[in-house]
Length: 194
Image 1 (cartoon, rainbow, N blue to C red):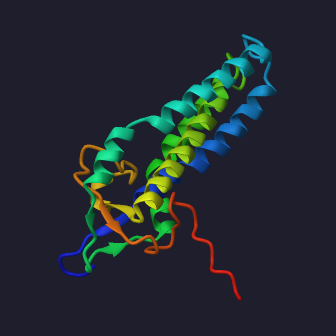
Image 2: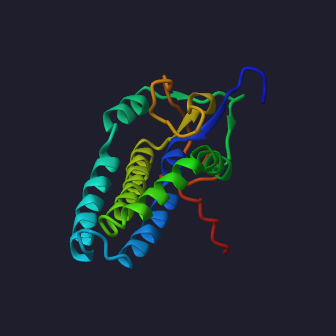
């Protein structure tokens, strides 16, 4: 890293990093849960799971929006010595930092199917859907402000996944074309060949 520079990770990529694992593990756990009759029966379990899915999606998608908005409003331009972290590295760091939590959540969701089939799996899937919605919301803010939002890697915590945590004091911003991720944290599409 250049002298005086900081390693920066995209805020939207950090948020989006957990969406796919939570979604797919949740869907799989719910599928396994449907195979088990459970104490409450499948119908009640699936209905409870559907309600939990909707609530989790809404809560995760809207949680800490004021904090994200305040940090985005106070963002300062990234310096020329700042090092922009690749999308793949950010995602890998988040997933490595949270792998045991994901495994435990999956096992708990499958185990709880013996009581309430599919409910906990749908709750996990709802958390993943909420993270996708939150990253899309951040992407719309980035497009509206014509600037990508970045956070210092050393402020993300041990798991690499707290882009609006207490340790984060400010965001950095760059032009909309910086880095290898599009607004919202998705992979940037390659330019069409003419």
